[in-house]
Length: 127
Image (cartoon, rainbow, N blue to C red; front, side, top):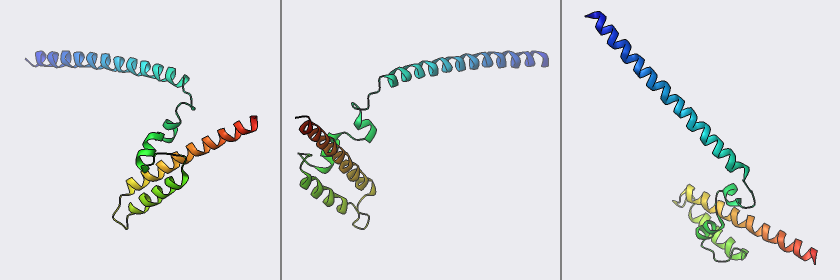
């Protein structure tokens, strides 16, 4: 009786071990495929196309957060930024998370303004 019980336990352990090994092999293959796909996508990475990915926010998101229509209007951008920044201070019962989003939106718009200024300077120099 004990002999049969040991045999059942050993056969069960062997079948579980084989299933586990097969699963691990499949996971390794999936990981390798994902790494290959990621490497292929990384090879086509173009920073000029993905400025938003580098900064974490698109220009449209920044415009929505600061509620500005024209990003080149520095006065409007600065006024909206100051208002939202002070309205969301902890002392005023605001949210640090929202305040940080406001700062990131201002940084993103400033980045766009610098890019635009650099383009206009290079165009005026080339004329």
